[in-house]
Each structure stands twice: as structure tokens, then as C-alpha cells.
Image (cartoon, rainbow, N blue to C red):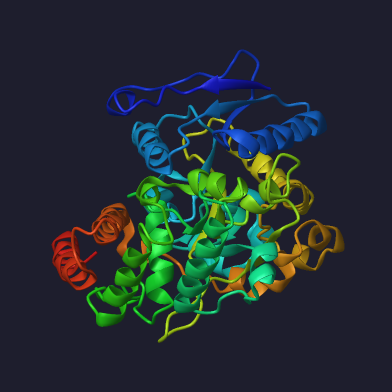
Length: 422
């Protein structure tokens, strides 16, 4: 196994960017960019190589999902087989489906058995299973158990409770000498992660999901506006101004260093908060996200899948690699080692998995009922829809617009993107 670099700068994305398998390699795969994600992929690929005798090169792609998608679109549009197996986001099957192999043809109709039905449905385009679920995700709320116990608070059930609890604990901790303490950190940068955060605020306040299942634009309503206004009130008060440029890792860094009471993030952060170098190891709890006065808790559906390019010269072999990496043994290993959510329902009753990640059991309903972004109904336009939504949200968080102004303007922008139909 070798690691190959696929040139992926913003300039290269506009021009040719290709790589070739090393001499003797049978397949190439894109399955992680940095850190634990890439390391786990390398370990899984190495296990398959040992089992089969085949050689696989891992292709390095951008860590940014937006840049990675652009690179994939460029390569696939050129009908290039440079990458046999691609790691694709849960919102990409509709965008890339025409370029991906129907895995029912290579793995059989039973390939999807045991996986969450919602994800299989998401990955099925015009009756074709274009990607196998690898791990799922849903936003969760991390909190400092020790601090809530110290000051007599229970984990918040509503966003208003979170605001009040965070405000009080932040003030008390700063008075006690923890000058860097903040109440709440989340992903506030203008990117796909903010779409997920804002969708959770809006959906949990009974504001809908931007575009409904029939394709109607629903974002311009009072509940959506008030949800965004509440989030904007956090900036500079319980959330640092710098959060306007936070992605997952910046938020985790603040929380893991002991400088935040609450954090919204994905389940992957659990194992990192419990690591030897974490200042909050043993002090962290995880619960479902709060809800607004008008709604119920809502967690954005995330996760990644593995797909096979239609242009692969070895589609059968590539499909076998996908089946191995998305199989029960690999998903169990990844869950135990790094808290990656399995897509196989049986693993949520596995004692070893639940010992390693206890909240997989208590938050099972959160993962099975996560709120999907409107990628299926908006199809090829989803990228523009999400971009418009997170930019509108960012304008509210930064104080440029009120929630009502932003959603009214956003409605018009989405109508222009939609025109007569998605």
C-alpha cells in the first residue's frame, strides 16, 4: 500500500489534476484526508491487502468536503478511472450517481441488508445502489459533567436552557479564574458544517428543513427567523467571536482544552475528548441536542459512504474492497477505536461497542431519526441551496442581518435557483 497525492489546490481544481496507480497496484481508493480518519482507512485497507493479496494505493484528497467534491466532479466528468473507490458524503449520491456503479450488480441485492434503511434509501438513485454506508453521523451535544454537577445544573433540554446554563457557568468559572472559559462552541464558519448546525436550530424550532419533501421552499417563516436570532445572540456572549470561523476541529480544540461548557459536534470527537492528552477526559457527557419552544430535538444526518467509479477498470474487485471496508468487522473496529457510528443496526447492541462508546445505546433514536439536508429533493442544485443557506445564516450570526431579513432574502435566492423546478 502506498499513499498517493492528488494535486488539489484551488488552482488545480480548475485544470487537470490526475494521479496514476503505482506500479503493481490493483486499485486506488480515496478514504480519508488527515488524522485518525486516514489512519483507520489505512489499517482497513492493509487488512484487505493481507487477506486478498491485492495491492491498493490510497489517494490523498482535500480535507475540505467542498474541495473534495469539486475534485471528484472534475475526475468523473472526464470519465477518468484514476480513483476506483471514492469516499462520498451523504449528500452526494444524487450529485454523483450517474458516474457511480450500481453495487447491486456486483454485490447482489442482499448487499444492503442490516444497514440503516434511511441511509440505503439515501444512497439509492433511480433504483441503483450507488454507495455502501460506511459510517453515519448525527449532531450531538457534549457537556462538562463536572461543571454541571458543580453548579447544580442538569443537561439542557431546550436551547433557552442551554443559553441560561452556559451564561451562568461561564460567569462563575471566569470569576474563579478560568478567564478563557466559554459557554458554548459550535461550527460557525460559512461552510457545509454551518448548514448542519443551522438546520438543527431551525428544525428543532419547528421551522422546517429549508425545502420540504415536495420541493417547496419553506425557509421564510417566523420559527426559522427566531432560531437564527437566538443563535446570533450567543456570539460574543457565550460563544467566542472567533466561532464565526470555526469548523469541527476548532470547536473541539476549545472544548478539549477545557475552555467550553458545551459543544455541538459529531460523535467522532468522543474518543478524542477521552484521549490521554485531553484535559477533559472522564469529565464529558453526551446527550441529544436541545430543542426550541415549538419543536423537538433535531440532529442533522451526516456520514460517509464508499462508492465505485463507473470508469474503474476493476469494478468487481473494487466492489469487493467496498464490501470488506463497510462490513461488520471493520465497522466494529472503527466504532471501538474511534467512535465512528456504525451503519449496521446490530452493532448498536454489541457489548464491546457499547462499552467503548456508551452513548451509542442511549442516543440510538437520535441516529436513526436524524434530519436529512434537502439534497435528494434539490438534486444537482443542492450545492447552491446549501451555500445560500449557510451564507444567510452567517450573515445573521455576524450581525449583518436579522433572522427575518435573512430568511426573506434567502427565499428569493432559492426561488431563483429553483426556477420552475429543482
